[in-house]
Amino acid sequence: MRKLSGPVSYGVSIWLAGMAMLHFWFTIGGYPPPLELASLHLMLAVPPIFLLYPATPKSPIDHPTLLDWGLALLAILPSLYIWLDPDRVYNRSAYIDPLSMTEMVLGVAMTVLVLEAVRRALSVVLSILVCVVILYMVVCNLLPGIWYYRDLPTMQIVDILYLMNGSGLYGQLTGISATIVATFLIFGAFLQASGMGNLFMNVGTFVAGRYSGGPAKVVVVESGLFGMTSGSSVANVVVTGAVTIPEMKRMGFPPAMAGGIEAAASVGGLIMPPIMGAAAFVMAEMISVPYVDIVAAAAIGAVLYYLGVFVSVHFMARKLGIKALPKEEIATFRDVLRDIHFAIPLIVLLVLMSQRYSPYYSAFWATVAVFATSWLRAHTRMGWRKVLAAFVDAGATISVIAVAVAAAGIITAGLTNTGLLLAFTGIIKMLAGDSLLLLVVLVALSCLFLGMGVPTTPAYIITAAIGAPLIAEHGTASLMAIHLFVLYFAVMADATPPVAAASYAAAAIAKANPLATGAWAFRMAAGGFITGIAFIFEPALTLDGTLYEIVTATLAVSAGIILICIAYVGYTTRPLPLWLRVLLFFTGVACALWHEAPEILRGLAGYAVFAGLVFLPKSVPEPASAPQ
Image (cartoon, rainbow, N blue to C red; front, side, top):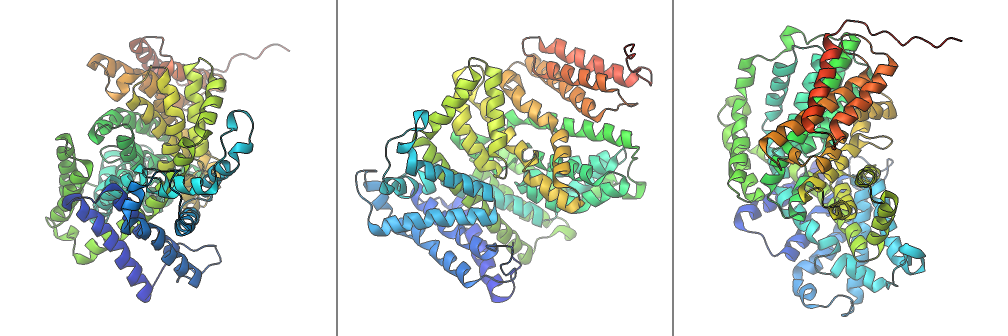
């Protein structure tokens, strides 16, 4: 991202702040009709990308080039055309009414501009994926078998991506980005600008700093709290990791491990209620479920995820002999109380959402509460400079999310308006046969593959379109559980090698090998993979069941996660031999996922094994070698 200065910096900041303020006003003043809102959203969000993000590593870092200015101005025109004359879109018949030459040019230009904006600000991989979908639309009539689809003239392709009502660039996904996602990004920006990070840091050190491996456990607590407000695992790594990774290295954690712990803890923020990440808001709209219900259903899963990270960190710290934080670095209860007033905005958010107010209405008043409560203490008061900075930061994040969602809109339009969706689902269904478990694994792998270098929100959208209907056909899991499963694996992709954005960011701070850092993050996040799959087979994890079912399902899955984490760490009160680690791994998988056995038996058996590992004699003999 460029570091602008002078008049250009002021101009871009005013644009970003104005965009965020306009979206913020809409939450209370009323939104325009969907098409006008979507076109206005992209008209304001896409141009700043070309001014903030250089085209190549050799491009100027302190000022935009003439080409950047040209692209930024050009990015206004396609959306402005729709915003000025929405009736043209509403009243025409797709595929029947021809596009004018102006509309053809604007449609192609907007598609190319979104591709370039995604490449600059987000991911080359996502940009390539969009290109592949568009290329398929061009050549689909030339392909054999399940890949064949009728000939799509260029005019129809542009129609699907640009001018078809409810499809492509200005479809439902862009509308979600302009409403719920934008409002919560503003809320998160206000939380960060207010200094709420100090509360998270103090809570982390107060809760976990006094135990073995204190610095790493502080990371787990702090990153989970901060991540739910940032909405980005990479942003979480950059902000919290700048402090926590050097501290972990100072206390004795190897660089790659320190980066992996931070990456794993950071990605979990996107599944941590009550805010979660942008993909969760998209989910609420896609499955027509109140967001507060998603928050409730995701709560146990988030706890299980962080249980896995916490257990891994604990036994790894004991293995390395890393002690607690020094006493003078541990926050006191008084330190926590200095910023405890920032709990008020979160309470406001939860109360309003529990009363079934809309998410963006709830986020509006929670944001107002952030500003109001900041004035309760002198050291946290938000003056006009902090408020303006919060709107500028929110505007920058809204722009990035908007182009990511627009790219996802192109992909979903290509999937649903051609035979591409049927092709993918047909391949997965053929490979899985009648096995639900194999189907779940294949969809999970697809999500991890699509998530390589692709932000969580578009990765979730694409995989949900492909895999969710297939799993739903089995009738075993609810739509909520299926989409939570997809969301978890979209989130986990950020920590999964070989391309893991959060792990790469952590590796840069830790000065470690990115692949080694990603490998550690992958292991630390084991609880997320297990929990994601368990959603399909244990509906009680989403609160869909009796109290007994919820408790026993949680008991079984948590026992499995603990055993799996101990298996790869290889240490409890002493080193564990390889044969025992392998046995523990498969025992953990059985406890968590062997749904044919009663949950209570799996849970009790798993915790009995764990107790045996901790309390039995301090040495476990290797099996006798076979005679030569």
